[in-house]
Structure formats: structure tokens, C-alpha cells
Length: 138
Image 1: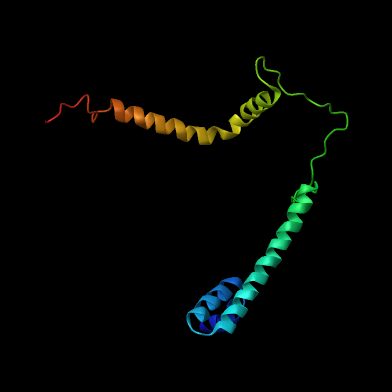
Image 2 (image 1 turned 30 degrees about the vertical axis):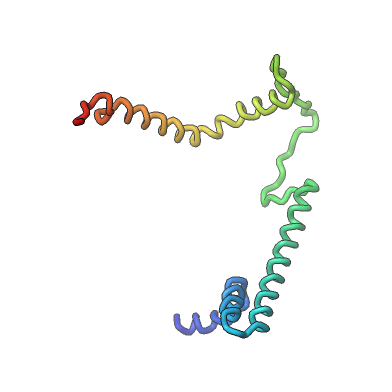
């Protein structure tokens, strides 16, 4: 294990966490050229990663499917399904309401936590330690 750490220690120094630590430590001591070179390499890592993210998001924005699964085959004769028409509401408000209704079954576990909190409040309010049920000592 000691030999493994000895081999990986120099590698760790050129990775972003090691470069950040080196820039900080060398900046504390009056070795500015070393600190600035470590910081410059750290910035270069950040720029390469940001550029890779830019390329990926650009491809995704242009409609490329970047999932690892194959795209589902949609039937060609499928017709466009129009949204709900709710009387008294504008089309965007009706669309948001329709979206919430369609997504609510997927949100059931999250809504259950809210139900549990309300139930706990009711139990505490009506329970034996209720200040209205227990006479005050004062």
C-alpha cells in the first residue's frame, strides 16, 4: 500500500485538487512564480472542462440525443394532441395546470412527505402534550 501511495502522489499533484493545494501553499510562501504556474494550470483544466461542457450542451440544444439508450420509435401516423381548454384561463395557464395534473402521480412520494408533516402537526396539536389540554402550572 505504501508503494502504491508513493507512485500516485506525483500524479495527484498535477490533477486539479493537487494544483489548487500547490497554488495555495506556494502562495503563502514567497514563491509566486510556482504559485502562479499552478494556478494557470488549474485555470487551463477549468477551461478545457468548460469547453467540453459547452460542446455537449450545444449538441443537446441542437436536438442531438445524448442518452445511452436508443430513441423510442414514434409512429408516423400519430396526430398532434392539443392541450386542455379551460374556461376562464389563458392557454399558458391551462398548459401549466395540465402539466401539473399529468406530473402529479410521479410526485406522489414527495407529496406524501408533506402529508406526514401535516399529520405530525395535527398529532402534536391534539396530543396529550397540547397546552390547551394540559393545565398550566402558572
